[in-house]
Image (cartoon, rainbow, N blue to C red; front, side, top):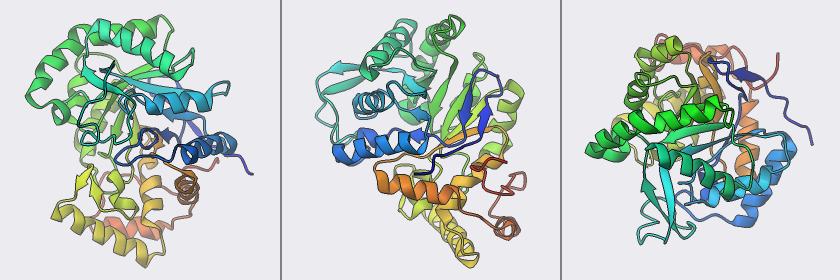
Length: 340
């Protein structure tokens, strides 16, 4: 079996270097459908065998299930790990666990808390769930109006007045190397830039082959602040990889129409649309890593195939000519997953 030899990119802050391809741990927690745990463990073993090093997880993913499985898989390896804070896991499974996205969750429920004490508690809890003595990066999970609506004002105040201080202390004390937030929206990223110094934002779905509006505001502001982007959800919840889900729900008509145009252009050039979606974000120098979520070895093998697919320059030129790319969006000159 050939081992991956991935390029690495150093975060703009200099805090940490990440392989350009990482592992997204939400599906491992049973996102939207229960996992075959044997298949999931086989996949995790294979990620190690092929040379994955960067893994991202969160307490929310399966209410602890993803953290437990990630920790078991990477213990005693040369790993890089990010997990998240902002939710504490309390005993007792909620009646609507499936409606929350986790039909096979562990018997816990979430309590949102972005204050100082809760961030410190969440960090310690994650170390125990993971069974590890080191976490490299902590990301504030799902702060923002998309998750909290009008309650976000008080949650953001807790983060500004307490939670950020906890994260900064952990970073200054060397207990973690980097801090950031992990969200699906750009506005709260811009708000966070005003309250602290962040190493990276894990942004799901908002700088993709389908959506590049963040070039108008967030990405220039992040560049000035030396805050890198880790790109989650490169397939926009699946719609760029043959599915019909966008933003974890049904796609609106304008999104469906745009995807059809992208798909037709990809077919004209003999390019798998998902391969283009996986490679596109890394053309931007601020994007340090792309971390598609994986559920089994089939998805892992398909991801590796897409990552190393050669995409002709004419494909990108055609997209730009059709107005399917932002005028300022850089495009790959070769697959970014190969060294030199």
